[in-house]
Image: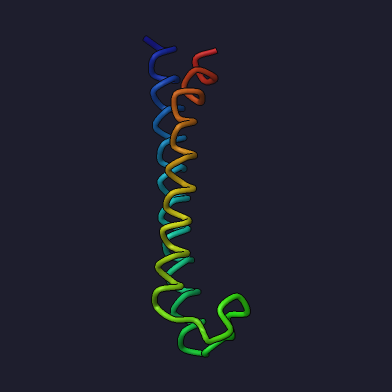
Length: 82
């Protein structure tokens, strides 16, 4: 039972840390997007200032990247069991 409690705590703590990282990345993406639109930073790729669509593109890029990291969850559980 003690080993199960340790494994449950480790699994919960790692999942909590993962979701914390997700929400911090969301906040960072939207904050920087808003700052870049407000200050009219120049987007060298498009040759114009940043727009709302650029902020959404970054947000979805971060979202897909983080969900691909979510596939590592079963592997992390296996490592904690070992």
